[in-house]
Image (cartoon, rainbow, N blue to C red):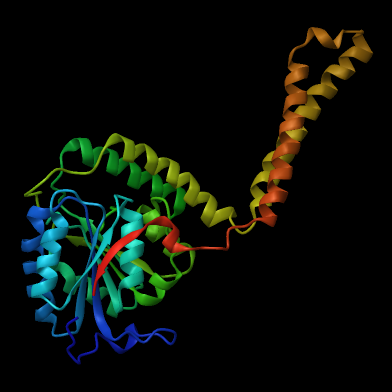
Length: 329
């Protein structure tokens, strides 16, 4: 851990956490052995130029291409490098959570290990934090990815903006800068790393974005796939629930339940009236049974809302999402 007695800014400390260093860079790694030495070289040059204390926290997310051996080498040569090694591949969100938990900086920078993020952009992020923002997101512009990756990303970003009100061009960009107090409040699990700006905005933190250079991939292959795109929309539904109804689930399930009960009751009442006025046999109208189904389903949803109110999600244990095999301090 490199220590230079130069604080980042007076506004970047907070009462509950006195960080011993100014900047932590957290880098999730999965099969990026060819990129790591060059990334470390670029990071070291960019961070040394700031003349502030820093650390680089690499999280090896179950790589099997020799990435950990490269990280061991970097750790031996550079006291600022720390390494966390998972027992297997757990995913990007657990890797970020582990990096956050083991970092000490008043400011935390996250970036990918594939060299597409340029460490020379870090001063831009720090300047935005000095302006009073709590989270600064990168906007890869222009983006150096194939259409098969950029088109779904644009659709996803547009959908997130419309449904959450968080107007960002590249919400899933891994290049971000966080204040420590935001890190301390984040509850990330599953694949919620995509929605950090939404979760931060919901809690009242100030969020902005800056354009950053996006470099072509030099080594390896992209981890993006159609499966991740589909999961992203499922996670969006979960985030909408978390940010809107987590603390009051009865408002969602109760409203849906009451609407279903009302619709089913009106349907059945209509055919009851027909039976009385026209002597029309009810059993000849299958929609009557659909009305009964709506009533039963509505009652079920209402009871689900009551049960959810009693089991609201307050317990959070970040370590449940991953298993650490080794830590190099």
